[in-house]
Length: 289
Image (cartoon, rainbow, N blue to C red; front, side, top):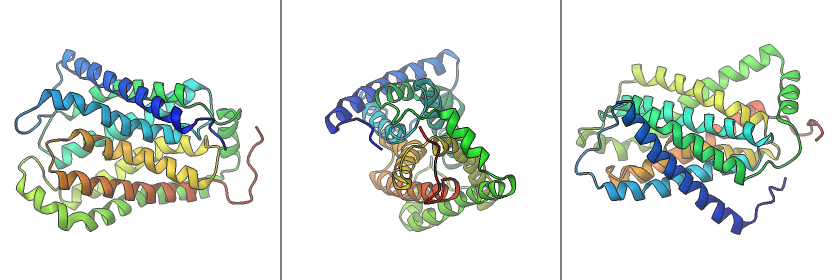
């Protein structure tokens, strides 16, 4: 698979997407305020200039994650735009608002979700236009072929495994970093650790969301399994938390780095699980372009 995008063009296209994201983030904040929605309270003194500047590296992270998916995703530009925007908004806007409610006392999570809708749409729009489809295969053809070969019972079993996999991966990697991060959670009054009785059901709910927005990408992928694992893993990592951690300058640096590495690692593992469950087996033929 060749995306037809050179390394030099990646640089300027990602830069454009980052600016588009930052513009969308400003507009999203204005929308939330116009709707009189509370936004999360940033603890301590707020450096507005720094917060504005950090929109650009955050936009770069989101753009890389979406572009890594876009270069292997077939379909018309508006179909790819819709898939990418939904992917980013559902995982970050909805999923991270749930996470923010569980793990912080900052409030304003509904406002944060509404505000993130605009940059999700604008960033995905730029990525879909600047990182074109890798082939002439139609997205509808991919969906038709995928579901034609998927028998109900085995497919339902794979869905169940996928839903159960994310909480397990999430808890395993969370347990690995716990000795490092827990002391910070105990020392900072705006962070909290929910009980497992709350955490596990919510993790399963987030798993359902992740699967719903990942399946269209897996179905519409044109390329190798390895590239899909990398692309989907980068997309998950960016949307789940790395992009947000870049902007969270009020977090201790240790927390930002440790959680960033944790999210990147468990995103790759989860992407690997999804790819094993839902892609064609080696040697099985795909539809012709």
